[in-house]
Image 1 (cartoon, rainbow, N blue to C red):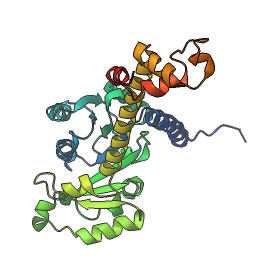
Image 2: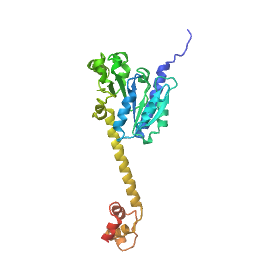
Image 3: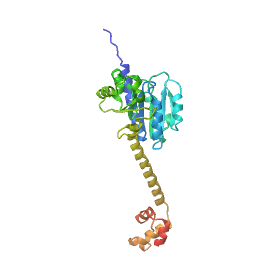
Image 4: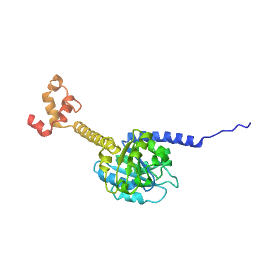
Amino acid sequence: MSEFKVIEIKKNILEDNDREADVLRSELKADRTFLLNLMSSPGSGKTTTLVRTIGALKDEMRIGVMEADIDSDVDADTIAQTGAKAIQIHTGGMCHLDADMTRQGIESLETKDVDLAILENVGNLVCPAEFDTGAVKNAMILSVPEGDDKPLKYPLMFSICDVLLINKIDVLPYFDFDIEACKERVKKLNPNIQIIPISSRTGEGMDAWRSEEHTLCNIRRKQTRQNKTNRKNNEKQRKKETVMAEERELILKLGKKITDRIPYKLGMEKLTVNDPEYWGLAGVVTDEMAEVAL
């Protein structure tokens, strides 16, 4: 019997992609950029939901959006009109984004000045769920007109997401959609998923998506506040170091006056900006205060 090698193409591709995704996640963490991967079928209301989300959060954090489509730049143009940073990614016929394509998008988006980066993935309930993009969190939208049986037909998508937004609840009276049955089916697949019914058209439920204690928006908000605090503290430290590095004559004189070290008192050694008497005063005492004290 002839010997031959069997190559599991899909397995190898997914394993390689998972490694690339882990590397990208680490890099984003180092840059303090939160990447959210938003998935759904076409027409579920992803872009409209993003417009609402950006409007609610743009004063709190810097937002950048990567719009992924096989063709067209309609969605990127819509997002750009909100004032958020936006780029369009054309997949060249592919029905999903993988880690490498996401990296290219991140590099083009230039996320150094972005707190929350959102990837609006290609409209599809199958392929995007199979490829890890390197995102910190995954969210998906299921719209009422699609039917409450989608968790039964496309279980993987519902299994990997952290948040499910059930959109277009304003048309519930016109469709045979059992929202409680849908929630039950999703929870069986993913007990930890958060489910938030919304209408991106009317705004109903968007406050829960924006403000709920454990939703991704609030997680990112907390991280953004911490990043802002860190940036302010770093700026204060830089200013303090600058002040301390400058040789201020009045502070040197005051430092010499209050020191109890004999060599400095007797003038045997010169007080410098490196001595504790100087930098202890320089950070809290102005030249005017030093002049009064002298």
